[in-house]
Length: 148
Image 1 (cartoon, rainbow, N blue to C red):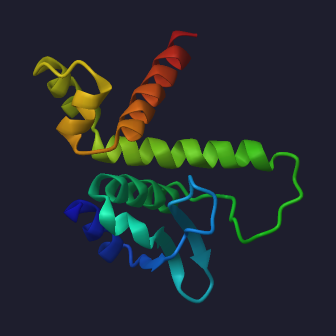
Image 2: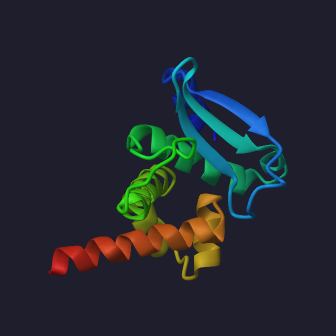
């Protein structure tokens, strides 16, 4: 988590915590570029109660900062390509986040040390299981794309 906070400080990313209880369940964080504040990450205040989820969500939102999201939830889009753009933005952010928290070389080490399940790998990297599934899914996509 310290490495993530170091990035936040270095890149001057503003972090705010808000009550997300009225938002859809799967939204734990938002990345926004604010004209006055600059880069802004808003996180659900309940993340303070879940270290692993907090770490994974923060990493993904920092991923949005680095992968320069072209979409902004506060901007109204009428483009038919919006969902495609959002999916690409999400994939890029997830790729950055999973590569940062679970580098491929360390994943190989974990597998060589005997980790066999997604649960064991999540324990090894101190991330959530869904985050680990995401890493493995992105790796699989990467291999499939290189085979064609």
